Length: 313
Length: 222
Image 1 (cartoon, chains in turn brown, yellow):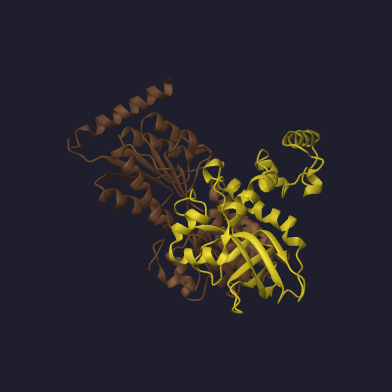
Image 2: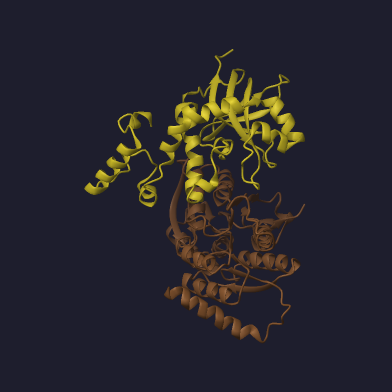
């Protein structure tokens, strides 16, 4: 009861604040909430979603939660308060997000999740996520091949609160652990961060100079690791990432990082907006709430065709 | 695994055993048929290996047998009209964005074998022109989740998250490896005949269709 009252008040306050500024013919609003745009992947999502929303005639409210579940909860309050007709969300935690999305649903605002899933169904209208496990398998298979099925390697893991960190690690190991001659000498989280990966790689390399490969949970960490390896004169170490960023594309084409896995972030965000539009205008839910999008292996063969998280034909 | 499962006869017994072990504070990883203790602590209620074993003989094999088409026919149709091939030989309820997976029966002669890799494969000539038409995975390491993805009664929506869904996919490969593929001969394979019931996923990147077997027989040396 208390919560509802607070929400209603917040909604009221929001409406009052905007009432004068908003012309009567204002378009419907779609809120787009993602992690920090420092990572080009999340930026591509926000840009993709915003472009599609504008194309379909919506106003947009683009916000970042910085992987902070409390902040995410506040942003969802803001979206509800501003009278958003839908929320496009790349969420801040598979468990922590359930209540926030439920809150939006109770306030009549449907959520369309992208990139990361939550541990509940029937709360969001759609969960459109990359098939991270399938993608991790592709990356790991390429890694195994590049390593010649043997040698010491390091794994850099993503942020623990993000389900995709665990899924990718699991996908990597489901493939790599089938090869007993591949030995993991270190496994550390660098929290998706390039600078953290650089620092971690430096110290791992000191303790384990005999490494042959590094498999990383995302591209920004792969970039950090490769920079540290290059600075130590170890460009021979095989590095494989995940995401399909332009930075890693450029590294691959110039002979640095060996491979990555493309997640169709841009297309995914646009698809979420299309489904939101269908829901708003036609009250139509997507056929399936949970929707998987397959990832694509990127290596020297197809890297030149990669641009902003999409493959050109 | 069957030897472990014979005395853990039901899910209830399994759960009770688990509870009992957990209560005693014993490491359960040596006794229970899951891969590691870490996974058990994360998801004690979902046991992918057991889930696969429970449906393999009663649902999976009958489904594959009923759905399978001769490889040449399926592959020819898949090359011209994937959706039509998928409706007939695949899982029409698959995720819209996922590639099609087809169930096939194939019979032919082994023209090449790569048993050096742990992801061992056999190249099979099916149409008799001496050239390979399909590549069959014989484990122990296997790629993809073709067996899972060919089944129309398995839906991603029915799983808590991708991890459970993924483990379930891997468990099919593991079960096929344990019960069928690990028993296949590994030496002097070229020239021998092979018979397979399995599935493959359309993937633009690979040169030969990669078939994951659910059943496989290799004939005697010629």
